[in-house]
Length: 166
Length: 166
Image 1 (cartoon, chains in turn yellow, cyan):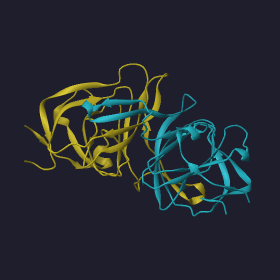
Image 2: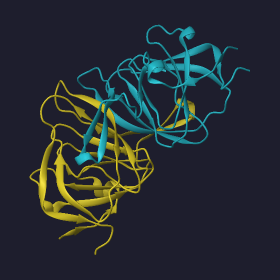
Image 3: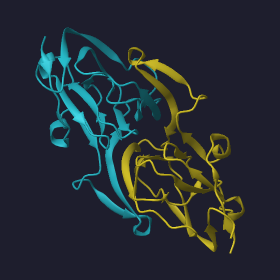
Image 4: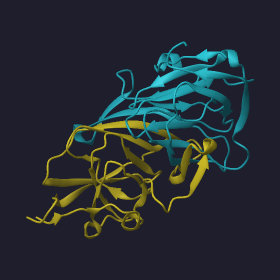
């Protein structure tokens, strides 16, 4: 079985798939609140696609996975973006593939720190949240509205996600 | 000078001003990701008001205040909601007043835990982020778009915010 190993999450490597939500020197930074706050402005957008859509906030509470972990399914949201911001300080794993017809050759895995969020662009294929270490909460910003917004495919053959080759 | 003391943040007490963003048994809960995740669904909405508006995510990095703290200004965003989710685990203070013509008699202060976010409804008067204890990051979900979206008033006379009467 093919093994996928994660790279450290960076905005450059993740750019084809979406945004990294983090404090970063390259962000647009605004001094507000009489100098007491720095606003890292618009690091991501909650994209919607129809007049009856709305942007919502949810909390996902996820049980951690054990590695190596067998990847069996991938999903995408054609009508909107989906952002995950970790609230529990634990690292987590992100698995993506480019938008368009699913191609397993394009699978990429990233190790995100507990202070890095991700925002999947509409249509980006991704695995569901892969918490590590402990039960982890994520603030999720995504699109709600009419019509199907989740396509899922079975990954055949399965792919093993592991921190190192084995 | 008048002193305002905070109450513990609860969804019931905060309902006139907005939403509390937290894991809570009364949330709509959905089992997703093959049972690995509980989705606390749509605990808040990022409200916008115009066709050219968008919902964005930013990170606010705020220096903590020392108590007692003199409240001098209040603000409101007429064209959209504004949500704050703490990322640093520290408690923080929230000061609000009802939407409409500002009335200092309606001022309320809340002590939020490090796992509680708030979403101010459009028009709710609020003080800017009042981090406590240490430099604190917040994920902020609000509205971006054309036109003025921030009214600010000076609080005259000033009001003292303190954890206890003194």
